[in-house]
Length: 335
Image (cartoon, rainbow, N blue to C red):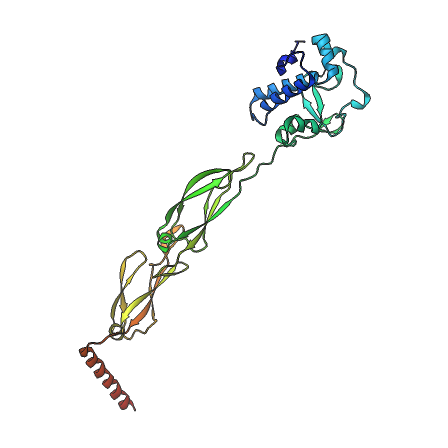
């Protein structure tokens, strides 16, 4: 078999102490750790070579045989003890694939590493990570390795934020730029809010939430709409309510009044004779658009507010006094 220079693999001289061997192995193992180099086959192969070298040089007895006998050292290894067959001889240990042939030592290319050794060499890395299940799969039965598992894919978390809109923004639709901070990084997302959204509506922005793990999709962002009060209009569902000023003479004799829509469009409203204060008029199709159906609109309801004159000219007073006399005569005649 080809001779492997394990000292060269670890980058140490043959005079290196056990402490120096361990330090060299620890440094290189971290550098070529598959968790640090995901998908890198070269790093994976290098890591196996490091494990194979340390399996031999890290054991004083094996190192002595290796130094004395070179490439044939495995032929002189002692046969395994009866208690060593199959599983991990120290119980609860991890079998590390060193990439070796196994020889007559019965290890089959694996050496046993305890969890304490793993934490000593790799710090507090999760011993149950994808890497450790791949390279350190423990045995639950003699001669049988446990099933390897990978981290479960998990969708990213959803984010929710309140956005405040004017009634005009809700009518026409609006653009908003959101600043999102996540994992110490800031990013902006431009969001289109559709026409017709109402108080408490939730607008979903797919895939812009928290990042997923294990290849899973990112979460979503949900914007909860809050509408600011409007000085002239009240919204009820898809309908709008407003007030229209009607002069007393128009209310009595009939005529027209002007209603301005939320779009700023003036509409002429026909006022019949004898209109009462608080009377409501419906203007069909001049309310809010419906979400996803902008061609469909609610209605606009105008409530008449009869405007009484605050000041009368002498001529106006004469007419009102004459009207009052006519009303009195009408009462006497009815009596």
